[in-house]
Image (tube, rainbow, N blue to C red; front, side):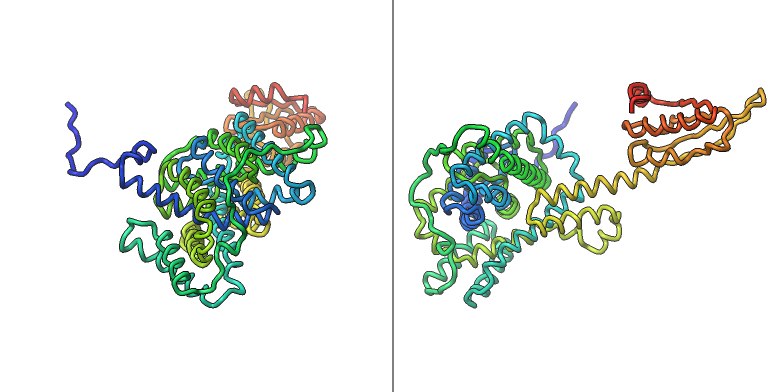
Length: 502
């Protein structure tokens, strides 16, 4: 007979879904306030990325609105924020510079289509090949880049910016210890804005970053020739945009999975990003992908867990910049800098650089993490940093596994007085280890019969088959017969199919 666990007298926590959030005032408050904080943080970022791409600020702002709203319905990772990003802006900026706005929008539309096709091809499954050390490097590099982007707002500014930024950080750090009813970043933004307005303090504000739009986004179809010449111009940039967007989005989704102890649909997130970019392009937006900084504000700082916060971030963004642009323009940049500085501090994996962790961690793992950080920071491109990190991890792994392969030679005397050399090969045989296999045989002094025992190894690739063929050929030239035994089924099939052909 089953017995139910004793009741604690407290109701079980509600599952974080949109339906439960709409039914629970407590969850709804968290989602609404999180969306508002993210919307405020998106404004200067979107304007900055518009400048990078060489377009009007409203292009970045409308892109952030359409991306956030679209991905809240289409994406596979609840509570993740997608909007205009610096990585995408850097990729498509040359198109705007050399060919103009219409070609840029055509690039965004094609990039979204490529992302959908890559999703259907199963590209999201490749995420399992990204090692943890690369993920740690990605997170740490991102924290450094977030902090670096704030430095410009702290150089050649009035002295009042510095104490205001310090006060904002103090509020964000200290308020949660007293009360978590209202997100601390929102309190810091409101308080510092009120201070600058009431005290008539002259410091840089959001309005200084660029003009805010005063109308809703409109349907837009790029005026470009639909021919192969246009495709040749935009295809390389669209492909780069698609790959960068997918990589950043999936890595961010995995990070949110870890924070929330939940799983997300990476394939749906991939085609959702593509569909959201198409929607964005059709409204004249510059495209985008997941934003790690704003996502951390939403999930880690504000505690949001559902698609509602993502949708509201986009909706609030549009309402703020179109309906309350004059008020939003008064927000001091010091307040937003304080928010982003704390996001950077919270994003960085401090455990990864503790002396105790570094002592226990294999040097190869630490090296991969450092390579990912350094390359990402130097190139300011997360995709390049992650790609180099993965290649470094693969190289070090192959080198380490190759050294685990060894060969043992034994001379066996048969009953008829003849002898044979038995080579027992232990370890995994692939290109890195099999290339050295050829040198581990005593061709000149072995008897007329040689047996290669592979019962404790596995053939993984054509390089190994080619090495075995080379060994057999060299022995046969000396009149020595070679017998290969102990192949498991997969190795035997591979060897039988490729032997003599590579």
